[in-house]
Length: 302
Image (cartoon, rainbow, N blue to C red; front, side):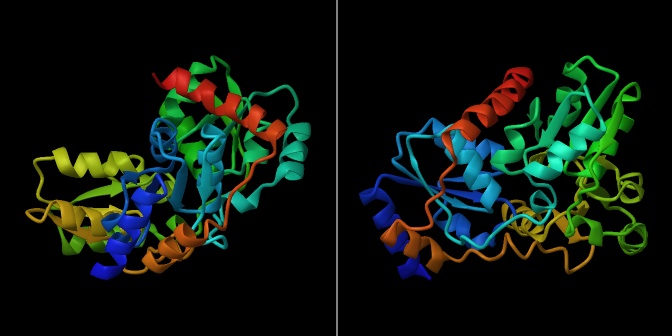
């Protein structure tokens, strides 16, 4: 592995490339990553670098977002088959149909969506700013897609906005059930439960803290508590264990793994850097519309 890491780092410098790794990626990807975090942060930070090539260790919609925010950079996805099962639950035509059944209502899309879907929405959001974004719209009713559980969590937080959700979901987070939380609490009575809002509402209600990937990691870092039950993807648990060895991090169950996020290997990153293949393209008219959707969110989130 050491030789592989050295080869990647050497090639990265030669080609003026930046490597981005999402928190759900295999933890060894961090050995070559310049930035590790959630998808929007990574795309934003890459757009501000002088890199000519962006290698995105993540899934397809993330690489698309990076391309939208960095149209002049070459964006490469190490595993071109790495999609997002939630993002794939709604395409352009399904969105048009959803809007036609609910006319004249503003549309917010989760960042976990394709460029084509973003291009037909009023504003984008992440799990960390979804409440703020919906509140900023100043309306009493919105359409939210594709994640019904994040949308309904936002509705509950605000209390005065009806959130009409598309029936999409994250299959990985939906594996976590209330009984898993209860069992973990019984086994670790001093642990706090930290959950992602993509989880089912019945799970979120049992958590001590609900937040985005970054939010969960920051809460664990800053909390005086020493033990945490983590109700999100395994990659978060792996990084917390590595970064805070004086604290205890318990996965809520042992199979909370996103198969698409775990596709990427160090070998894939080396290969894509060598060959400069798996390049991501977004049609110019789609990108121009999608970037407005993202920019409106960034303006609100300042």
